[in-house]
Length: 144
Image 1 (cartoon, one colour):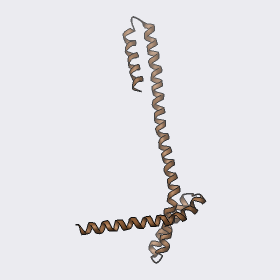
Image 2 (image 1 turned 90 degrees about the vertical axis):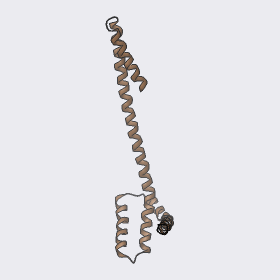
Image 3 (image 1 turned 30 degrees about the vertical axis):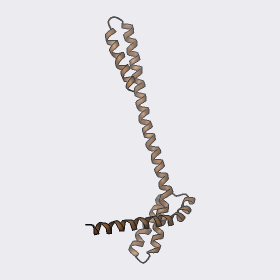
Image 4 (image 1 turned 180 degrees about the vertical axis):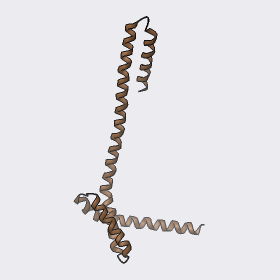
């Protein structure tokens, strides 16, 4: 694009220099300059459109991750609720998360089935992370 801008500037300068001696050449250079400006405007517009497309594609990819991965986490939350069923306040909250998620997102049946199986892995991963967090907090408390 910088090359096109340079040519536009060169054509405009050449047109000004040659306006009195070669008026026909000057008009041709101005026409070329106008054409290049239109091309430059189209290129800038296309560049912006490609950036928008990139954003849209990234959004679709992220939505795909959400549709594929989030149900497993929500199922894990429901399983965890079953484990700690003796706390009604938390059970109600977790039920709300589960129901709201599946009401707001139309999850395909095969992903829903798979998510129930994947929930166990999510729970195990969450427990490992929780243990590491707890160890770090204990370490932090001991060293402060």
